[in-house]
Length: 122
Length: 122
DNA sequence: GTTCCATATCATTCTCCGCTGATGTGTTTC
DNA sequence: GAAACACATCAGCGGAGAATGATATGGAAC
Image (cartoon, rainbow over all chains, first blue to last red; front, side, top):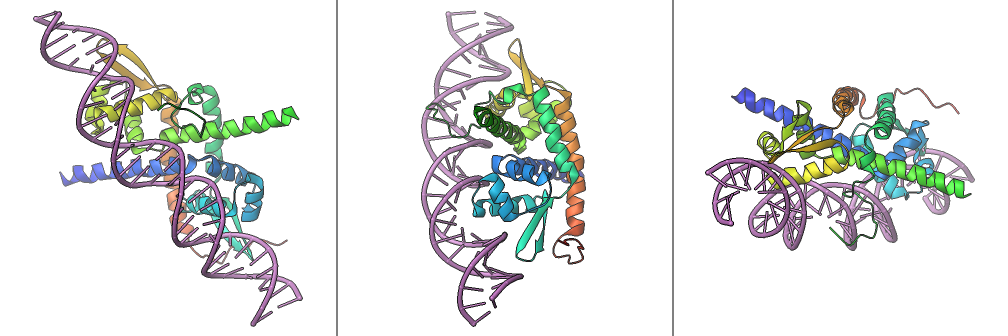
């Protein structure tokens, strides 16, 4: 019965892990950063230039992505170079793109996670 | 130039769409529901029983999942039966599980201050 | 040393969204 | 009809986290 409890814990943490992973990808800014990095490694100010995000903001997201294991970093003099940690990440992003084209046409219609539009309901 | 603006919008909405999609998956409760549905279609009170979530909570998440195109529903008398909208969704969840195992072990193996990276000659 | 540049961190604000309890809608059975 | 059941929706609270401006750290050039 402790076995059952252990299994339940294992399931819970596995679900938690996936949720965290998806949460890492569930942000336009982080997706933009990952897209930029898909073309090749970049240092921070290059990412800032390509994403039109502020430097602290980029730095914050990079820390998040790094802690989630999605990107790795390496210091290069004054710079810090970031890259996608695994080509499988890029593959996943690509696959999801295809999946969205094929299946989830309704995602666009989903009102739940709209970025600021003037809606006076809810 | 409107073409450029249109393209930029297209890119923005593509990123937004992916972010929304991942956001739909970035919640333990919704993942638990999807896991339950991966085994086969279920009516709401069955999902409630298997996930230990409250009924309004489940109902709320199901609406979200439904609007995002991740699940479909069908009324069956007093019941409403939900199912995964596409096997590709289940495939994605499974693939991510495998990816997380790979990334997690990779992170554990290569983390924190390894100065032996011989690259960078420019 | 000092100065400048690249990046990280901090403190704050503010919006979003998940959970809950109560209530509403729809369906079946009597 | 009324009652019981299955599910959906609503209002409100509370926590999480994203963006911002200011500041701190760390390295390079002088």
